Length: 352
Length: 172
Figure: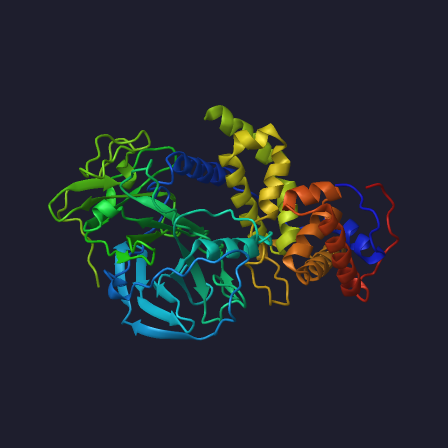
């Protein structure tokens, strides 16, 4: 660290004393490497299904929830985007009794599915899944145009709004919403007090064909109890739009092979995401807390079409899916050996 | 993979303290700083080959500085001290250090995120104006003007509270 020129006395004084003032902090190198390998693998495979290191699961029952409420994607704008003043009021259109599902011992998912309409007309799917223990929070999903995403990215990074880093054909935005706060002024995507996470659905690329695609992963903050939480959102390819999903969790010891599935959940709820295509989507959220001594999990499962065609994903996902025939000829090298979703029999978890 | 991991582990060992310090200056919260640093390191790991072609530390620092730094409660006025940071036997030097830390975090937290990034990188980390401009993707002129405003704000913020020992000289 070097001295700085023209430093006002008071600032320079504090700066010099601050050299030794930062609190004790540390980086968990093993965790960084683990997350880095996972992120690299995910990127290498083109952002396909990746639920490695998922340490918990929250499925929510909003099947076909979006259904007839699909909102047309906002019109494209030319940058810089000029937004109207927000109306800081949410109107609940739908709210149901909370659903509590036990996914595994110590892992509970509480779901309060709701559809909200912002008074500017934007629709938001509020999953009810929270990613913070500090206060009430939810994960909401809103549609976003390319211009809106670029505008929000520019605001987020305080960059020149004329830059257009996002060129996806469509997007949804996953937002962790804390409380009932109002929207941030002049921001299409953002709330005043929220844990912003940009999780963008890439849209389809002709060269990429996968059984599922992770379009978003958001990291929650540490809460001192459970460590970081992550949310993986997965969109179901169009060819599998009529499928059901059976999702399993298996323990994944560090450096080891996965254990037998701890739990499997049949008919995992999916809902139509507010993408331009209205794709099916499901979310999983991780929580390290229940994983004492074994803090990684693998999520994998099987999509089953109405005609009985089964397509595995996740732990045994490969990159050779033929969407036309809905077959997966081979599994990828990162498919963990010796593990595949078991036959659907008695391991389904009770739902209450 | 093993070579990459070994290289990166060595990099983390060498530079994590500096990155953590920068993160703490940017966000004012130790736990958030740890999270920001880890996120930056993960991204650096993913792009390790590209980072190696230039300056890995600069790459990691750039990634760190461009992350969201205001996810902690911006409206919170007090600065929390983690329980593990509370010594059993509080010495006067510890109190002074904690006071400085508190004062610094409060002052920096009053700055808008952009000003905070620039003043931290320029005046607390000691980067050149060109380096700050490159890290943040802004012009050198923006760095100069923003730093000037930020320092004025800090001066106003600290004017009445700093004990202001004799300033140190030095070179940029």
